[in-house]
Length: 250
Length: 157
Image 1 (tube, rainbow over the protein chains, first blue to last red):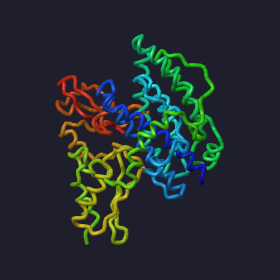
Image 2: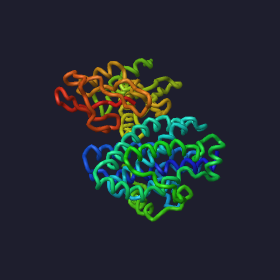
Image 3: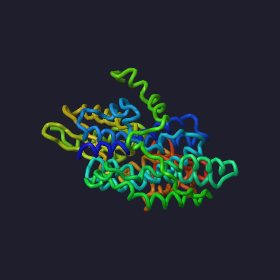
Image 4: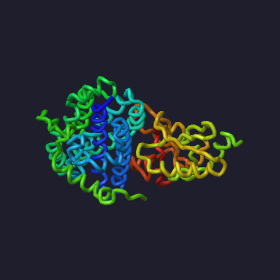
């Protein structure tokens, strides 16, 4: 294992970290108390998964960077998250659709990672697989409820779909890092998860009375470090305290 | 010399920070105790990936064992992943006794979270889910349609 392993782990770990940060912004602002609690719980699970993967990536890298160094001291071009997760929260429907598009990927990825040749990654995955299964139940139920809800909620979900759909495909585009990670047995090839992902997402959209849009040119580049401006603002907020007080302890 | 069993006895008195009616042994969080030379090694495992209580549990375990053991190391392991099947029968009884429904049987597929066997207040089996997430990572919020009381449910996991 080497550089490809670090990159491959950061692609998943950073996606979890950035999404957890996005979800945490709902704390105290969700439309109902139960949803406020739900998103905080989901964010906590996903943050825990991110911590495990970032710690492992730092160990494999061998340059002395721990989870905090990786989370707080990298700039946007060094982040490897999917573009999907850095998209703004928008309204609750947008947040739930983004969550479904993520959860439906996670719920295929983690069970495959249980068979990773890296025992630490396999251990993280064994826990995360159960959590992801619970998360997708929540996000899918909201996409159905809002898509097949009122005229207003339906229109909002159509707008959310229009906005987010181009970001749904990035997780399944293989590059040389993915091929090397798959050959070493660290991770499954991203494209191998696509058929199951499509099936799940299309089933939920059908139940939500939402059309499955045609495949667009999938937005890409986040996994290689090319991000939109949204990520820089998110990181600025997430990192400011740590960078202002780098040696502070509790 | 203090024995491994002495350590287990002490651990049985360390409450879970978020479910203080049960101990870390009742919940299946304390997985293993053994001697490595003169050092006592205790293995603990988190319930959920993001469980915010792990550091406190580690601290509490060390503090309790320090009463009788000079050299204690606490290790955190993720694998095999924690499951509610590891909650002991005594732990389930304590949960129910404090108004928290213990986890039901795990079902396949994993998408199904199971359901409480009965209302922990009145024993009715007429219960329904209010919210899939609750006051801690391991619980959901349910209510009884007989006595109308809401209650926490430790999700089958």
